[in-house]
Image 1 (cartoon, rainbow, N blue to C red):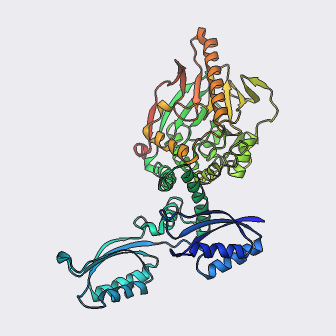
Image 2 (image 1 turned 135 degrees about the vertical axis):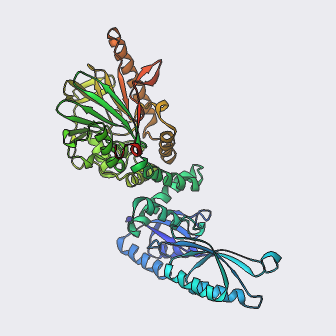
Image 3 (image 1 turned 60 degrees about the vertical axis):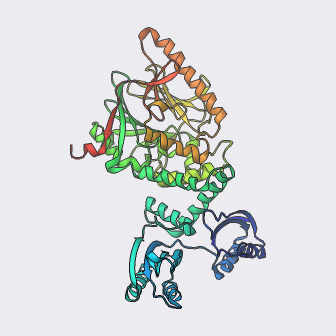
Amino acid sequence: MNKYSFVARMPDEPGALHRAAEIVKSYSGNIIRVQYDRRIDPATVFFEVTATQETYCRMKEDLHAIGYLQESLPTLGFLKFSVYLPHQPGSLFELLTYITGAGANIAYIDFDDQRCSCSGRVTISLNIEETAAVEDLLDRLKSRYRLEILEYDTTGEKLDDTVFYVRFAQAVRGLIGTTKDEFLLSLLQDVNHIVQELNSRGQDPREVFEWILLTGRTLRDTTGERFYADVQRIPISDSVEIFCFQMPGGGNIFLLRAPDETVMIDTGYGIYHEDAVRMFQHYGLGDLTRINRIYITHADADHCGAAGFFDATAYTHTGSREIIRRANRAYGSRSESSILEEVYTTIINLFSHFTPPENPELFPAEALGTRSIFPILGRFAVEDVEFEVLESLGGHMHGQVYLFSPKHGIVFTADTLINFGSLDEGRKRYNSLADLLVTSVNVDSDCARQERKALLELIRKHDEDRAPADRRCLVACGHGAVSVLADGKLKAVGPVERYRASEKRGS
């Protein structure tokens, strides 16, 4: 038996759901998930069933025959107008005949002929599918009645909740560009599944839909002229300077500039790639041929999602490669079966234009030793700065690594340590969306706490050892400013300047 899913668009009438279930049963299908909430959309039902391929196809044919199977997502619009009816029998019936003939669905109607202030006025809102039919309807109404058009919208924003899922799909289409209905219907299935899961945990379904759209809108609305970043430049040796670029959403990009090359650590989201390249040019880092190595700390889209745009060798953990291949950020963890993690990966990869490295080089699987509680998987150098690749325990994500230079005192902590205090309000709001949608960005919270404690102790010990030379360990967090540890808290070091794309064009 295989698992299949389909979306049913059924009439809001007694027995409709029972009729669909009867068809599934008649072909020995087993319904393993069903979700319907008339508060969200009174006509849309999501099914997952187990069946053979043959019986599933026959099942779909029967559902299609009775008009229950939703196989497309029409581009609906919204029309609101008022007409003034003559005071005679059948006048409202005649108006409704015109509307029915245009194939429009009435979402709202208001008529009371006894109102003295607006006698004969009827106000109607329509959900419309065919623009040409609507134009014909308006021409007919103009020739017959006094007509006032109150609203006419073809973006889907004004649609009412009787077509909620269509409206949501149109909003997603607007974020990711034109795509096939089959893909959007599959995405709706996934989104509905996490809405169902979060609803069972007490979350308002409408809030969940809004969080998803807000994630995509935030990324879209911080590109181009609205792109910005916070930037630090810090020398870490006589030959190597580190640039930290805090992106508008998601994780940091680090560039280590050496005399003969530039090495990248983490890449940011794919959607920011063009903006990031222009920013690199502004800081004298625009020669991308100098970037021939990219080290990826983990497989979240905001840390590896632009690696595929660069003609450079990417290095990462075998676990990160598998997470990219399986499109499930919880792979390799005890949360692997979580539908929240799996669907969130799909959504964020889609919105962020996920373009990971195709054939990354993998860190060795066999440890060379240990540093604190972390296995040392390998070593590499950027000019005179040598790094150890430390394998995490998988608290934030399976396959996450840290990069530590004991001699020069800098550690790239990925998302185990974050300087939250250095984040602006926009970044804090955006980062909170992931927490809301997956309940925790760490796939194993207990393990993540253990890692955090060990990293902080490693940094403290390093600071003690280097105290005579008045040198502090630099903490290059996955999000937020490059910092030092002061009184148990992360404190940004050096000047942090704001780069704004709108101010740099033409400069």
